[in-house]
Image 1: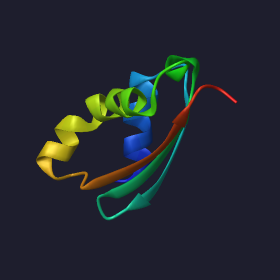
Image 2: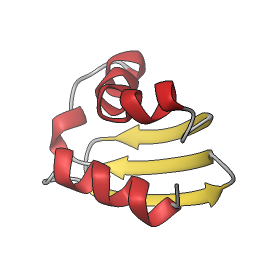
Image 3: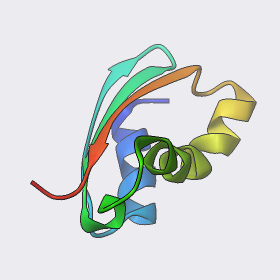
Length: 73
């Protein structure tokens, strides 16, 4: 799986967010900003992202994800 594929998945799932993904070799860094995250605790923000990536994590296509999430800048 490529960073661009992860980005496309998250952009489709979170259409009002700005998403950037770097990394490779099944390890990715996700930076996402959007109003969907406003007022949420960090763990809830992460749960939203994991919810959209879980099938790829379970399949092994994604091994690790670090996240920098928050409301729109």
